[in-house]
Length: 273
Ligand SMILES: [Zn+2]
Ligand SMILES: [Zn+2]
Image (cartoon, rainbow, N blue to C red):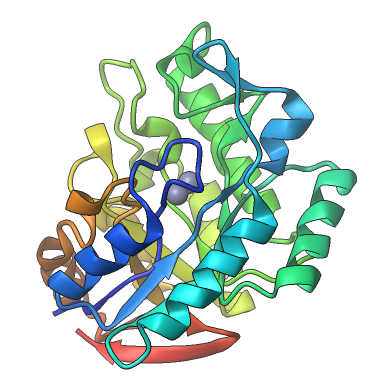
């Protein structure tokens, strides 16, 4: 069984609904051993002046986030390994990358989730990202950006939600399949293996099914020597904590994976599946 969930959001994120302690109580109730909060640090959003529903997206209160997180980490010690991490939204601008590096030096998050959300000036989560683009074009833009994101000049542990661009895509055939994007996916997967990073299995997959990346991509990762996978529900409210981890556990075992990797302050903790 999977006993960790290291990609979760709280009310410190603009789209997170529940307080940190509500999320931690849900993790305890789910019998998790390791629970990682990785609220959004959307410096990519700041650069693009992106808005959600016509309103500017407020930046995270970094000092308050880490202060509260560290206090709860102490409070839950002995019951739950709480990890206070961060989700860094990739951007190619050096100024944005330097801000992430600075935040990392200042607050020393327990782990960092490296994510691509923004492509061509908007968040590719939204259906309108597909407007005027073929599926091949839109997904290649996203995937080459993921490849670029692997070489950021700050530390990170997890490569998040590969396939994010397909979650709400409006194409009739919206699946992001290994066979259609094999070249760039191979380059991404080989780079993850070479750099010793962890590939996330994310169960907030929406249209893409129970989890992403799909079994075809995870199988290829395994073939290329990838053994480090993390589990992330990407929960934005308590009822989703640990969601679908039974399904992910069975799928990973079938491919040949034997353990889940949990990044803890620069060290890999391996939990058997
Ligand atoms: Zn994300
Ligand atoms: Zn997230």
